[in-house]
Every structure is written in structure tokens, then in C-alpha cells.
Length: 358
Ligand code: COI
Image (cartoon, rainbow, N blue to C red; front, top):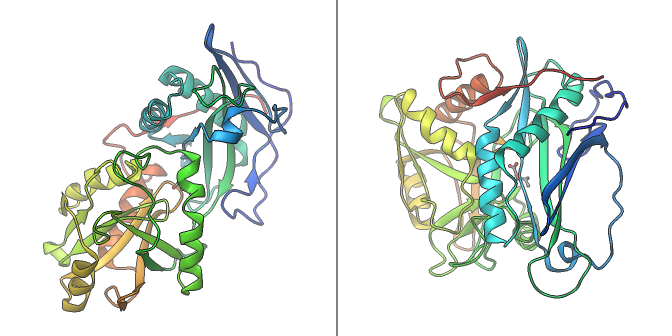
């Protein structure tokens, strides 16, 4: 049974919605143990936790999380594809030997938090409520085995465009020194360690004067996999002959919910899609010949963000004229139109949530 606190939802702070900073007042919490399973879902204030310093999640990284968004529509508030995020959280949990959060509990938590905190979402299509569910091993032991106790938390913050207002195209550094994922590893799971392991390569990208790192496959070090924590799309051709190519889900890549949405929306705009490997050499040659006209990254946080410049050990090149291209722009319009209720939701991707409490 869900209990909500009486704490009021704060009015929106419209001054700064930098990613991961403007948290709302509430969070939802639930516990799991081997004897009783998931139990005791409560909604209360967003507040520090009391944890044991010897908990498994802290030491061995048995932690999985998600990222999904709620948007203000012309006539209410809706969450984008929560069922798909619930499914990916369950898949991540299976890979890390953790208990799966049932879809009904995941959705009840989302409804509770968005019900309480939706008053904070301003009437601005560029600002959304980012929901961060996390499951971590809370058992007090340093034995290296799957824990027998876990916590689920759902918190939220207001956020604007991930790469800043106007979503300027990003520059990327192709790392051949570091790998994000390896065959048989955890690349397809949204687990904390994947992100910790990416920080050094991201720093290398910064040192090279770039915004983001691009990962290639760890064996041949030539096939493009992802950008930072996002999936990549290549636009071949332009106008009515434009087609999209994205690397296939080979077990190393995170199966992006936004990636999946683009694969479904693009054909509705008359843009063909295929999942094919793209090498770094193909990328460079395609941009130099003009065959590749645009490249963009996608994810929940960034939605769709153009890639303008590429640098690598083998030199650098510009994608198109370095600005956000027409296909990227159309897809951004199609995706954000559905998310904010300005275009029809043909796939049933929006879950409307009514306001509760205040
Ligand atoms: C998202 O796109 O929502 C992500 O999870 C990536 C984030 C960690 C920056």
C-alpha cells in the first residue's frame, strides 16, 4: 500500500535545469529480501539514506538503474514509454543477478512520484521531469555473491536539453585506447560500473577538445558502437533518398528506448532504417564523399543530438557542414512532438498520470 508524505511539491525553479541537479521534493522507496520479495512501497521526501558501509552495492557494484522522462502535454502530464524502461530494468537486473522489479510495481512507483511532483514541470517543451529508478544491493556483508537484500528507489529532477539550450551539435573523440564493453560483459545492462568505467575515456575526449567519447568494438577496434551513454545513427543520402543506419544490438550496446522509438518513427516519415555495422573508416570516407550527410546520438537524456565534428588518432573530419541537418531536425520534431502530446501517440507510448497530493 502506497503512503505519501504530506510535504508539498516545490514550485518549479526555472533558473537552472542542468542535468541531474534540480531534484523534486519526493522519492519512492521499496525493499526486497529473499524471504518476502518486494514489499513496503512508500512515497516520502527526497532525503539522505541510512545505509550500512558494508553493503554489497557499495563495494561490488551490484547496482542497476534507468532513466525515463515525464512531459507536460497541452492537457496534462505523461511519462514516455515506462513499460519499455521497466522491461530494460528487469533485463539489467537479471544480468547482475538481482531481483526483477515487477512491471506493476515499477508503474505504481512512477504514477506515485509523477502524481506528487508534476506541479514542478513548467509549461516549456524543452523542460521535462527526468525519472531515475535505481536498484542496489543493500545487504550488509562483504561476501562476493548476489545479495539477499535490495532497495528500489525512484527519484526525479527537472532537466532541459542535455547538451545545453539550443542543442548545438557535439564534437566527438573516437577512443581506440579504452573500451566500454566486451563480448560476454555487461554492456547491454544499465549498470553503474559501465558509467564509472567510461569516465576516463570521456576525460580523454575532453583533453582532445571534444564534448563526448565514441566507443568502437573492443576486438578489431574499428566498428562504431556508442557515443558516451547514447546510441548513434548515421544518415546516408538526403532529402527523399535519406536512410538511417544504426549499429546492431550485439550484446555490447545498450538497447536504447529512444533508439527503438527512432527505428519506428523514421519509416513513418518515409525514411528507411537498417541495423548495420559502420566502421570508423566508413564514417570518415562517407563524410568526405558526402554519402553520409548527418550523424546524431540519441538517448533519454539528450533525446536527439547532432554530431558535427569527429576527431581520432587518424585525424579529424566534419559531418555535413557541421550543423544540425534536416533529417536530424525532422526526427527530433517527430519524437518530441509525440513526447509532448503535440503529435498523435500512434504507438501508445504515453502513460498519462494525474496529479495527486500537493
Ligand atoms: C540517459 O540518456 O538517460 C542516460 O541514462 C545517460 C545518462 C547517464 C547521461
